[in-house]
Length: 118
Image (tube, rainbow, N blue to C red; front, side, top):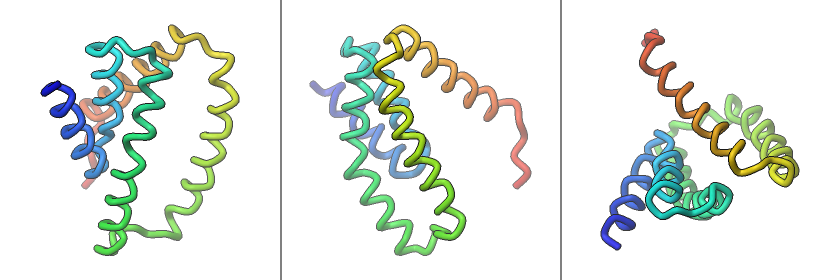
């Protein structure tokens, strides 16, 4: 029970700061709670609705969102969510786990190997 609270707190905190707390939550749910990948992703999506709303309000209040820059990403994200919704019926959970792992490894390697210009 305490590990659930810790995982939820860390995931929510990282997600609110824009660090991808969903990765932490999905890994926790699949590895330690033995939830199927699709179930873990569904829990993750529901979990982050309130976190995303709070973070969005706070970032917008602090004028940290450039809506004209964000709009194309929002539109593409909606299209991607729709495509993913239809594709999920055709993907085996093993393939989904491997894709998720590959994405996490790619992001990690990028962060380790590519120097930030700022």
